[in-house]
Length: 354
Image 1 (spheres, rainbow, N blue to C red):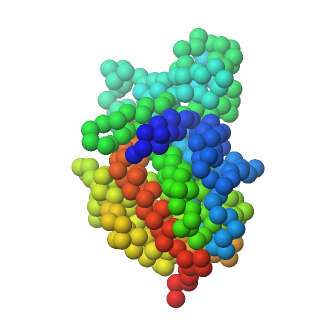
Image 2 (image 1 turned 135 degrees about the horizontal axis):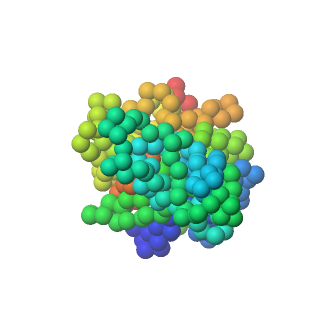
Image 3 (image 1 turned 45 degrees about the vertical axis):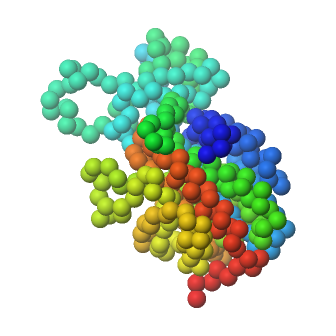
């Protein structure tokens, strides 16, 4: 990966963008992407939309959501501890012991504490933890002191923790799905260098609020009114002990991005991706999606009177935990695959399934 791209990826993944509060990541995405596209604009929902060759007759939209799971303050105790609710699909089992950061001017951080195991009765150790039973400790001594910095409704996120591992694997919070928004930006950058070969209009969108219902993809797609929509998201890697390959398929880190077959995938568009992968020798893996994909591709497909939809996924271990893991090679190959597929499209591609 180019040094500038890697530096942006690291900076972008380290921003704090819980659903509904994505401004830090979106402004960074815009600053990085703007120099190599024809234009960038945002909408009232907070989506950031870049475009290239917008006068072409066929419009294709790329969607990668920048929002991440997080927390929101619901109550402050008399002792100054903070109760909270989940933003998105938070895995409660991994929360105790986690470092968090509040989105405040004072850059307040805290920890989700847990009673020491020595103090927990044996029968209580088997109980399922619920969010309402947990509290965040910022080191405050009173409700009044906490209230100086934190208000009900203040959002928070897992503290930034980007860390390279062996090979080209990297672990961090929020790969889901800043990696998708990053790939969208990379595709726009690569297309800008081959613009004379591009027959279609491409709209690259860093979408918002996917974790609470793909809201940003729905509104931005309605405004763009694309003929085809491609979501870039994370997908389940099943190459760790205990994962059920019979249910989720055999997906490995470092073996290429995931392509999908199923009701959410337009057949002609899916065939374009398969041909582009074969022609350019880009490794891919396959996943079955018999119904909805639970990504932005779902709402892209049913926009207005229907859109040809597809999905490209980055294999990810430990999804929705503080240590999500991806391969840099998979990320690069995903960007290359989307780029080559778009470059292969004629001015008026036929997306009719039959």
